[in-house]
Image 1 (cartoon, rainbow, N blue to C red):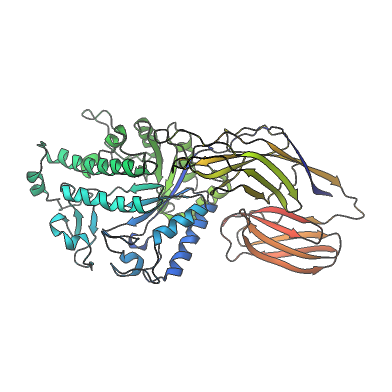
Image 2 (cartoon, rainbow, N blue to C red):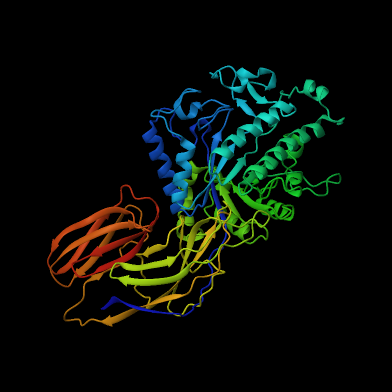
Length: 600
């Protein structure tokens, strides 16, 4: 049997590796708060319970490779944060206007937790919807429906703010900017609800507003689209003036217009049209660069006759006007009907996205169903599609200047792993220039150093630091080459640091005196149960632990003195989430580790 011992030896060298997934890719998930769909799970949770639940959601998303969340901070004219303009949400505390107990700021907490995990935070707003059902709603005196009933439009039991009212557009912009200015958000996000979706027997009665302020329009449909345009542009202009690094994105209904003789620019589809039904001219928003990204909700399967996913993705790509395009996937539909019971449907959709030029990523609605791992889709993210971490796509229209590289990278080793240290690069003082993290690349043996692909990425560090500890060494590797780069606020990447290489010298043990060995667990991957076997060369105090990939301890399976011999440990999984982990065997003389996969 062979035993690996690590010796310190540094020099410069390079390798090459082939990419298995894009180096840069938006990987998002919506976290819906309306109706307690995703978070919090109940209106009655305490502050501690709310925080623990959100941390669990982020940990699950991090393990699945998600690098951005759109968190619904406004659903019905309410707020998940202390606001001067709107009341606390009933979905947070059970009663509109009631603050959480003990009092805390949920958005500030969420952003802080996202930062720790290299996950972008996009504050998600529904701009116009204010009362779901006027017959059952209990509204706080601070609510806009109470303060400004003249701003409302009725649509059955639903009440929305009137997009044709200039004061409404001003109010929506103020609500958005209160969050954008107060918090260190990465993005502002709107969903697809503008004017109400068509319903039999219902109409939007906005004739008074149209007569009061037609702005030269003679057709109400054109005027309605312009109302939405004015609001979108006002928010875009306000964000650019106050915080130009904050991204602005919208996730419209997946069909702009169907292709016809009168509209040759439309898609080859036959479904509902957001342009004519909810008065959203999303193509115009892109053409005028009012949004930094568009995230159309393509919640249909490949081959659907009314709205084929494989037709709509390239249509949006051809009409993105060089803004970012992320595709919204209907994860909530997995397993809901016969056509969605094909486990390859969603992975196929991701591959279509990756193979379509001008598409920079995906997002999944919603968090709750994604984490249920229906048909094993979440497993496919963990173990395959999102196995390698991805940097965010850059936005050249916001910032193209890369930060300076880290200096004087050194590596040293112990039996526990490899320690990297570097000198921080000099950086400017503006928000865009600040260093927001580092990328650590690792290349084994004779791989060529290639920073254009994802294969060499070991981790993305979400803070400005000058050290990293790599506890996951591959027993088959004989040497590693490390490189570190710096990232700024908008994910521009510096050039490479110096290459630092360490030799892992392998020796041969005799069969008469076998070395301490740690064997691969079986089964692997596993769901509920696995065995971990090891051999002790001599009597020693033994500790066997399970860690996540960031070094956080999950379990201690053994912590005692053991005599030499063979051991088999049964690990029954009751709480460990899907993902990759490390199990570590520590003796008096050495530390051995191996990787295992949990795939529920």
